[in-house]
Length: 473
Image 1 (tube, one colour):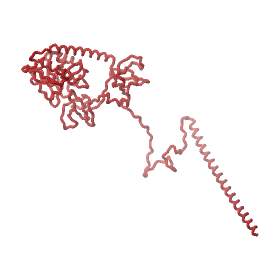
Image 2 (cartoon, helix red, strand yellow; image 1 turned 90 degrees about the horizontal axis):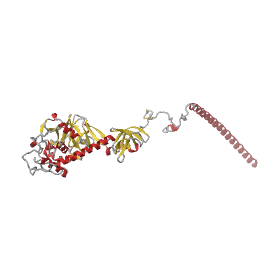
Image 3 (cartoon, one colour; image 1 turned 135 degrees about the vertical axis):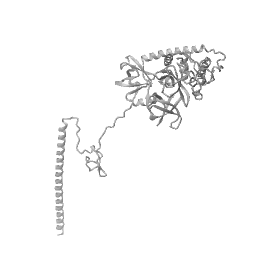
Image 4 (cartoon, one colour; image 1 turned 90 degrees about the vertical axis):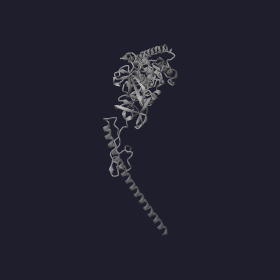
């Protein structure tokens, strides 16, 4: 009995276990069938979408086919959110960002080329090395780029237009890096009259006044002020508010200009040689040439003008040699102590003869020659008073060596009545420190400063102090 009971228990357990296994099998089969049906449905839907997109792409082979709700199209979308829904922050719907292309940085020198040749680069008629040379673009000179042809660029600079290989030019941002090295910053006055001050404030002394539309080299640039070179030893500060700042470069030189320049140099050198010979001939002064104090007229004393000139040559403007008038024939620095009335004892000086227009024309031949402080050579360099002295010597008129002394020679006239051949004087702090020769038409020629050399300017480029006439009517 006991054994039969055990067998029944085992049979019951087996039947129970078999039933459980069959139930699990049926459930698994049902789940698998449902899953397969779901996958079959998704596959059908996906195939429909691809067929639709492919049909549209058939007409545009470059069209980009993208799947809807592709997370890669909105990488910032949070999991479980609709990537197409507008972003919400603090209850506000943010505006949909509009993509914009970042503009490529552009240099203001994109169409400017600065020569980086060791000396110069030839400007040619056509873009090849066998073509005719029209001119030269020297190192540091600039040109406007008109067009580009392969490795060549067509440029315009000064009076020259032609082709240069681009390898010889710094263009764009490369050119910007060379501005301070090769360019000269210029301040052009944009008001009627501007005060040039001793320091960078409106409480300091006014050195001189400069007129509107005149341009001056900038020596230093600060936030609100620029220091400019006016002429000679006159340097001061002007407010940036009243000037327009630009950059000036040297330009190309044409073959014709180069030949003309060589001719002028040769002519100027010959003239200078004749001047020196003429100066040496009367250089045997009488024994009292340096002590004739009674005459008081340095313009008629060969000893005064001669010794003053030789003194500047030997001493470079550093020595002080007194002439018959007892005035210091030193370089321009002596003008500060002399003042505008330094030549008052010379007011009765004899007026020489000469043609004002001829004097002006002769002086204009030396435009472009260098400015040399204390110099007196029309060819190799001179300062303002050395220039006027040398020019008038050509016409037999002797002038003192300094501008302050020259301001007392001849006859005083009004600045408004000045004509070609008259002397125009300018002052700093009330003391004459610069002289120019009137050439007519409201303009002057003068040895201005080391940057511009001998040049022409408006007579009122700075406020004139006085005018003197040293030639007869």
